[in-house]
Image (tube, rainbow, N blue to C red):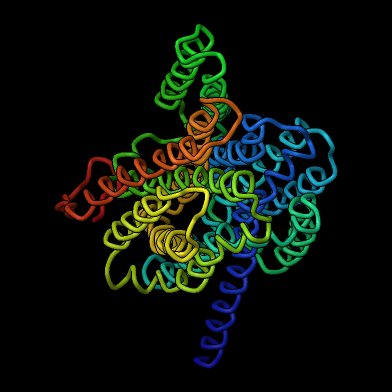
Length: 478
């Protein structure tokens, strides 16, 4: 009897880690797709005749579809079943990848990228909530989450390197490469993801919330991108910003009154969850923008090849890939708060190094040190923020917590990129060292704000536990 229990336990453990391997492959692919188009942007711009303002939508289209519907994706996973949602969304991701790689029109490419982002908005929270409901909270879950987020961070970091290799052949390969990977992952997921009955949340979909929050983010990015051309004080800009405020107000109004809201606003009373969301918003927002600026600097201003540009990002990618799997152990030993603060400091340091850009940059004195600092920042911060955001959350709201976190990262990327694009194009389409440096300053200022926010977490203390808490779904941890 004991032998049977032992073998059953081993089988269960093997199944869990096998499922984790599939989920890691998909989050690697999701993150890869965010960054892999980066090095190909100048080639896409040249072949499709896009302006710098239009070009940023190739990136923003994906991250807005991703970030704008992540909350709905997380809620859908909780309601309809995480395995089912994951499989359907992965299939759509593969089809959208194929379409994006064969179109010849900039508008169609942006549309395909948006649909692809929407699909990722359902796979990512479903995958994360499968992990957090499969692995018990504590060292085992921290290990699983550190591996999962390491794959995401590695995919994002190494996507630039892979993009450089593929762009040398042709930029379309950067868009087509995910197709066979997604198909293989889908076949593996059908076999590896457990079919057992899973707990599902009660209630229905909040379509009003999903539509208003997505529309507000799209309108905000469009407004910021167009503002330098039409004027910040123009009627169009002011009217658009008023529309953004109205949509956000309607979203909050709906969430407060819906029986089953997209976002239960009470969850935001958790200090550690809010800090984690702000931290990821700043990490992704500043870095997506820096990456866009770096592509313009290395390729369009300095004339570097796609492969040479990719090699510049290699130190950061390798550092993340090698070290971030250990972050679960570090989080157990030192706590996520300290790791996030160190990561935020490294992020600011990396951007500060790149303020020294000129027409004859020093690879050893600027590029490599800066990229190493950025790699340290991602390796420390990305897994730690994911662990911090999901600890202490009930199983029926893991989809919501993971959706909130991923939304913060993706929407942050789109909004900050829009601001940086406005800074880059404020003096026209011609690039200059001054405009590039000003754009990097935006990322640096954000990183410093993130450092200040993360430092407040070091002073937080676990509150006394009341005998009967008034709201059992308010989560407070150190």
